[in-house]
Image 1 (cartoon, rainbow, N blue to C red):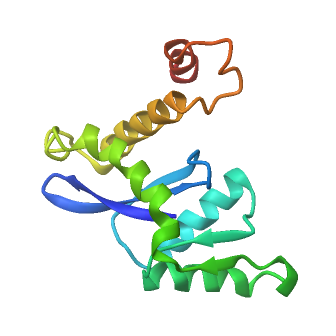
Image 2 (cartoon, rainbow, N blue to C red):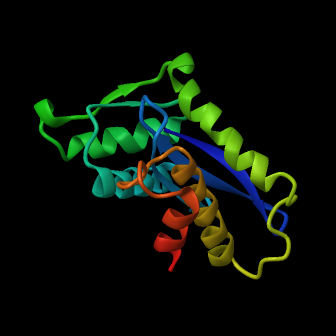
Length: 154
């Protein structure tokens, strides 16, 4: 799990992203703040969508660590999430940020968008496209990326 910066109307926002060890996207969330509450909201969203992981690798962010510790307080000892703060193990998600940055950097931020919600919708489409390119769909062997995207967007 990691976060990256995205500029919206001249202000920096945080795109929280989680990928598994094979590089498949687990979840993402755009947030105005980078604090414990935002990190906890992201972890809760990701766990609700994909299930509770055994281990989570994060960078040295104190907010992410505090959020995971607060989630672990509500879990039993044997069900707690192992927190790993190892710089080099987080490279999978750091490399996965490149695709998002490659698309959003030429846009020079989201200057023309009226609201946070429209930027969030655009980033959701970018993330969806990235997931489809990584063959993260049920019928990925028999359906083209275009057809998968069209089916999900329609």
